[in-house]
Image 1: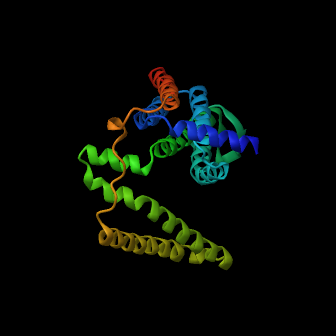
Image 2 (image 1 turned 120 degrees about the horizontal axis):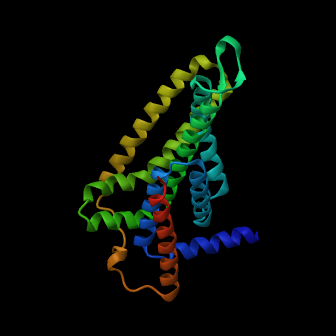
Image 3 (image 1 turned 90 degrees about the horizontal axis):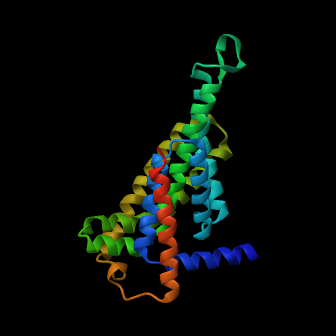
Length: 246
């Protein structure tokens, strides 16, 4: 209970900061992840990014689900590199080759880098709210992006629900022969939901474009200023990490 309360207070504190500082933090986290070139550097960055995600109020279950999804991408990368990369053998598999130390190192690095970039993108998407993105695109003249931004949330909910329903039905049947048909049904359902949501958005347009862009908003409180300075400090640390990542 105390941990949940602390996370709520941290999330409220972060959201009081200026949107521009949060946007810079997200960009610098992405840059640090892209420029990372060592496993130690990547592990430290991943730890910081996970702490920031949890501090923003991201549920632990959401992070766990993301790790399960990444496992389907990470395991093939790791296995193929360990098996197919030549080098000093750690485990011999006879005529099938073996697991090499170089393959374990390269596969582990690529897997870690993929996880790092995934969570960096997740953090970037959660640091700025939808209303702030809408205001930003309106001020910068990118009004053509606004329909896509407004479609993100309803599409994500609908697609997740349809996908989970079809996956549950396929697991109940338990036949691999029907997997291609299930995947085709998922694609068809997603396309149908997209058309329906686009038509609904067209019928109710123009929707509210959000509050005034935070850059031109009134001066924040002292608490908001301290939160902004803290976020900028963390962003500066991430920028320094990006610069020394090579």
